[in-house]
Image (tube, rainbow, N blue to C red; front, side, top):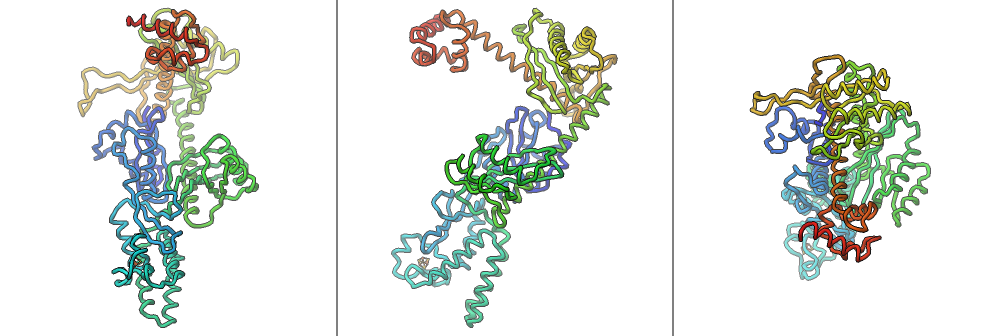
Length: 616
Ligand code: SF4
C-alpha cells in the first residue's frame, strides 16, 4: 500500500508537524514545517533531498498525519516531543530538551532576577521559552537588562554586596542589594518584563506610555526619554518574543469545528507548556448543540481512562459546567479546572485547537468523498454491476504445505471493517491444492451469507484467472446471481528489461474480470489502485498472521503434548505466560511452578522433559 498523494494540494499552509506512518500505523518519520503543504510536497516528485529514507518512502509511507501549531517555534518543540515519544526509525538525530533554553523569573523572590536555564522545573517560578538559539536568548536578555532594570547578580552576591556593582553605574539596575529601592517600582519592572516575554503588546505599551507621561509631567525628562527609548526598542523586538510561558500545568485543549450537523473535535495535549500531541474525533450528522455534545464528550472521554490534565480548556461554556468540573476532578482525585479562555495564551491555544479541528474535518470529508468517488470509478473501471460499498477479499496462506488457512477481510465504504474479518482453517483439502482451498472457503462464506442474507457486493480473490474461475464456479453452484467477482494478481517483474535507472521493471497490478481474456491494469496513483492493493495487502497480512499463530501453536503442541500432565489448558497458560517455546525452555522449574495449576513436581517434569528433548 502506498501513500495517496492526491490530497497533498489540500494540505494547510500553516506551520506544524507532519507525522509519516507506515502500513501498520507505526510512525516512521516526524518533521516540522513553516508551511506544511510546501514542505510535504517536497518529498514527492523531483526532490533534491538526498537523505536515504526519502527514496524509501514509496515503499513504506502509508499515511501522513498533520498537527497545526500556532507558529514555527511551537512546531519545533512538538517535533522534538514526538520524536522522543515515537522514536521513528527515520529520525536519526534525536534532539532532547538540552537543545532548548528558557528564561526563569522567580517572582516569589523579593527582588526577582532573570536567569537562563535549560529545563523548567516545578518550583513555582515563571519560565519562558523555549529559545532554540543562544544568540536569540542573549539578544532578549540584553534588551531586558538595558531597558527593564532588573538585577542580574546571583543571590549570594546580592546578599553580600557592600555597594552596588557596575550594573548600577551604567543604569541597568537600581541597586536593591544595598540601596533603598522602592519595591513597588521594582515590581512594576518585573511585571513589564513578564508582559514583554508573553508578547502582551497592548498592556506593555500602555504601561510604558503611562510611565513616560508621568515622568514628563513631573518634569523628569531624563526618565521620560528613557521610557521613550525603551518603548521604541521593545516594540521593535516584541514580534520576536511572544514566548510561551512554561506553565507548571498539564492542559487538554478542546477545539471544535462545525458545519451543519457535522462536528469535529480536536484535543491538543499540552504538558508543562509544551504541546506534545493531538487527537481528533468525528461526529457526523449530529444535530446536538456544541455545548451539550462537549459536556457529554468530556465526561465520556475522561471516563474511558484518558490521562487527566490539571486544566481543561473548552471553546464554549457547557450548560452543566460545575457538574462536569466536579466529575472530572473526582476522576483525577484532585481539582481539575474547566475553563473557557477569553484572552491570552490559553485563548491562543484554543484557536490552534480549533484550527486542527477544522483541518481534520475537511481531511475526513475529502477522504470520504475520495473513497466514494474511488468506489464509483472502481465500478466503471472493472465493469461491475454494483458500486462496491461492501467488498470482501480472500487469500490462502500455507507455509511448506502445512497448516493451510484462509483469510477474509471486509471493506465497507472503502475502509476496513475489522469486525467482519474472518479466518478459516482449511478442513477438506489436503496438500497444496490452492484452488480447492479457495473453493472450500468461498463456499463456506457464501453459504452462511445466503442463510443470513449477508453478502458483499464484490468478492476479490487473490490470484489470477484460475482463482477467478473457482470463485465463479462457487457462485454458480450456489445459484448466487448479481454479485461481482474479480481476481487481483500481483505486479510481475518483466524479465530482461530494466527501467531508466537500471531498476527492475514491473507490470502494473492486474485485475481479471469474468468473461474478459486480458486483465485490466490498474494505474498507480489512482484511487482504484490504492483501494484494491490495500484490500489485497490487508488480506495477505491477516492470513499470514493467523498462519504464524497456528504454526507457533502447533510447535507448542508437538513439543509439550508428550509431557505427562500437560493438556490444552496448561499449554495455553504456558504460552500466555512465557510467549514462546524458547522462553519456556530457558525457564527454571521455580518460575514454572509459580503458575496457577503447576505443582513443583510438574514444573520439574517439564524442565526435565524439555532438556531431554534438546539432548542436554
Ligand atoms: S547593583 Fe546590586 S542588585 Fe544590581 S546587579 Fe549589581 S549587585 Fe546586583
